[in-house]
Length: 243
Image (cartoon, rainbow, N blue to C red; front, top):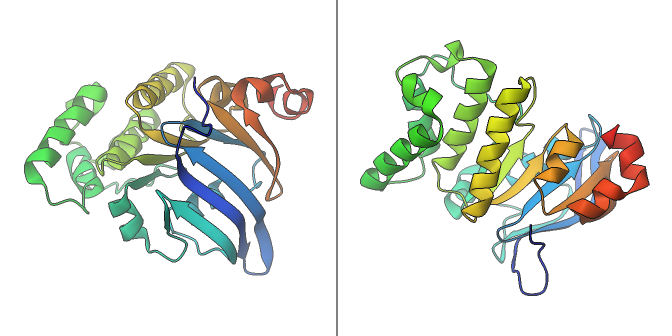
């Protein structure tokens, strides 16, 4: 896998980002970047601030300080809908389906910022081809799906906005190994298609094996970063996260 260098433009650039929940610091002076076309993973223990960082990028949380630059534009003060229109989609931890709506209706909601009806119809069929289980259940209530099917729907719904940057939060959480492999096959497919991905994943070995680069986040601070292969071989990472 390639790593962003001088020839690869930075699609996402985070500088000196700090986020607080009430008076409690969740992120402190975080610097990271994601090059166009890269898969970059965030590694860290529960509570390290990984999901907080994704929520700040998708503008669900306001930072206390720092800047978030996407495709050359400062989006630090933007609202959530505007960043979706710019090309950022967030598949959150816990899936957060609208359980009473059908699979099809959830997917249609993923395209709520778009007005290109024929292209939306094409993308619906593309998701049903990518996730055949969802095609079989398109008229079924999302709340009745299995955990794996809900995860597929969460990713498919995010892709309905045609993102250039996909924020993917804990896609393997609670899934059987076979389904995890299916999900990460999709991650690889999206990578090959040029979708840029910022990945939070509890399974650090799995995440690093599918990423170009990674950052280690500990108690809200970046403590290590580098190519995925380098982090995999780093004794500190192996001891703390790779078992």
